[in-house]
Length: 178
Image 1 (tube, rainbow, N blue to C red):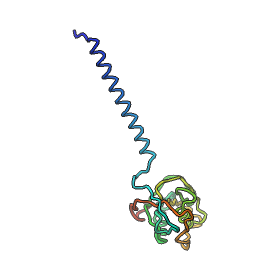
Image 2 (image 1 turned 60 degrees about the vertical axis):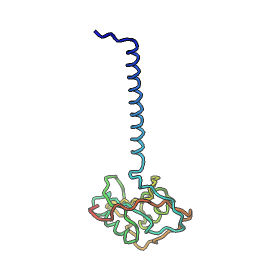
Image 3 (image 1 turned 90 degrees about the vertical axis):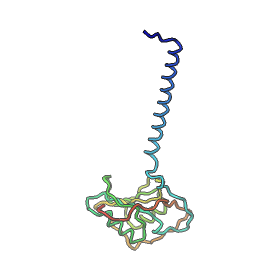
Image 4 (image 1 turned 30 degrees about the vertical axis):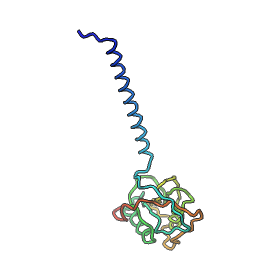
């Protein structure tokens, strides 16, 4: 029979408490990291860089086009129209999110990139989400509303004197069945 001394009991208690502290710190760090990853940009390179300029042209604006409708290839068709107007197409994809008509999504209502894109879609719904990547999303459905205004101006004045332009280059051009 092994008799445990008081010294051994204290040592085992301290080891158990030390291990518990290490585990609590690890879990807290993992939780913090998880929340940070879930709420931060998907790609660290997707941040934007504030650039001084007095006007913004379509070639400086990166657009993601999403098809929220049932017409196959709708996002690609719209992306090709935008590309023809000089916009840089970041990506095209489908989305299961529920939209009605064409929707333009960007950082804020006074964002010049968003205003320039929206000028090509008369009557489109404009929504802001305070994004930090400088990209503008165009979400199309089966109902394109007033459609694409091919003769819209390809540049816009920037009264604030600066815009937050994407640092990351587009991942691919408008291709595929989106």
